[in-house]
Amino acid sequence: MAKINTNYRKLQAGYLFPEIARRTAKFQAENPEADIIRLGIGDTTLPLTESVTSGMKAFIDKLSDKNTYSGYGAEQGSQELREALANHYQKYGVDIETSEIFVSDGAKTDSSNIQSIFADDSVIAVQDPVYPVYVDSAVIGGLAGDYADDSYDRLVYMECNEDNGFFPELPKEKVDIIYLCSPNNPTGAVATREQLKTFVDYAAANKAVIIFDAAYAAFIKDSSLPRSIYEIEGAKTCAIEINSFSKWAGFTGVRLGWTIVPKALITENSEAGELNQVWNRRQSTMFNGASNIAQAGGVAVLSGQGQAESQELIDYYMNNAAVIKQGLVEAGYRVYGGDNAPYVWLRLPDGKTSWDFFDELLQKANIVGTPGSGFGNGGEGYFRLSAFGDAERTKEAIERIKNRLKV
Ligand code: MLT
Image (cartoon, rainbow, N blue to C red; front, side, top):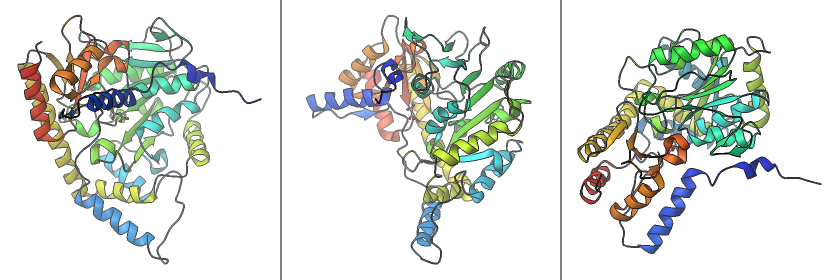
């Protein structure tokens, strides 16, 4: 007799972004004349750059010719792309071997799949608020326990709030896996070297592993802030890094990312090298490699011209972030993030819930944002606006907020 994985029943509500889309579609159906501006999901809106489209088109030409056609590629990614990524890390003074880099179809899948290489009694710590994928995948995999009193009883929640600058204290108890996301989704806070060092030291001392989600690293403008956890001494023994071309180069639909599992990484019951092999085994079995066309695009992003063009995309979005941040400050909100991250995180007036504000913003200003509580309890009372929209529409959205909403 087949039985369903009942862990799915423990998931709370629907996944955040489909829920936002559902409420928005309902509002639009009821108000067909409303001119809705979407600053909710962090989805890119600018087209792929010239280098990327030429790189991908050239690869499609190869696929169109019997003499140059290629089928399955390496599950770990093309050697060319892995080498280009290894070179990319040299810019931060970080040496990564190509065999430590695993190309994937994006950070979201890797950040959840990676849990499968750890023991099923692992204790997972997450920042709160948190990118919901880390939590939901722990729930599905049976690592989160039961939901009671607004939290899962086997997860450790590391509070991130105004008082600690949205970077958590070290967990009080011993944990095994620690998710850190910097630049942070949703708060836009970026961990300093010193802050990351405290976690690297904790992880090394406790043989814990940090899963470092660096999907927004390319948005860091301040050169004193780390773009990779491997800039921190000792991190290779205790951290896995996940990154993506999605936000950096407009690949949210193309799909391409990578994960670094250093050979030096150890756990309580594994020697250096084993986790790298185990992830390799997992990917070889359950993944057939990222699209070869997408990978050709990734190589193009990493070329000199490609990086310069991607920087223009980032500058455009970061200009939006500055517009949003400044406008909200002028409108009287307490505002965070947005300086080295494409998300602006605003504190709502006392007593207003984030879903209340979602509805108010949609109804009065026809703007879609993301309610902070969708990222967990720590997000209640906050709201996230994305800088990935069109520049003119973003300006218009901020004018509407100033004119139609009272703080
Ligand atoms: C977000 O809006 O938080 C992101 O788009 C989610 C994601 O990258 O999956």
